[in-house]
Structure formats: structure tokens, C-alpha cells
Length: 100
Image (cartoon, rainbow, N blue to C red; front, side, top):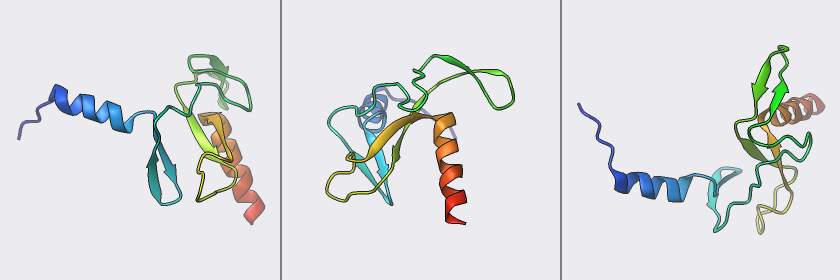
């Protein structure tokens, strides 16, 4: 079997699925504009900045996540914050410990 890349699919794929897709509960929402600005709202690191990870090694912020502090059906972006991967995992672990 041979896979073929078509430029048409790449244009459609990048246009629809890249930065404007938001996973909200069990559904995906597509916005007209990119809701991200590329900076973590907690640690203020931007995409491309270096930081020291938990293993004491230098690492680079590659992308950010949108984290929902509360879910609203009418406006999914209402209570969201943009965080780096490191801060997002810290928030998730903290929330899981509260639930125990």
C-alpha cells in the first residue's frame, strides 16, 4: 500500500484542524479566529522560550493548551486560560488530588 500526500488535503487539513479546533467536553468546536496568543498565562513563557523541566534539563515550549476552568455550553471560551504543557499537567494533577 502506498500513501500519497496531496496538496489539496494539506490545505484543507491545515485550514480546519490546526489552531482553531477546541475540544470541549466530548465534542470539538471550530472557531473563526485563533483563540491562542502563544503565551502561558501562568508562567508567562512564550512558544520557543527555554525552561528547566522537572528532570533539571533545558526544554523548549513547543505549544500551548486551552484549559477550561469551568464549562459553559453557550460560550466555550468564557472560562478558558492558555497554558503551556508543563503548567497544564500541574493543574491537572492538582485537580485530581482535590477530587480524592
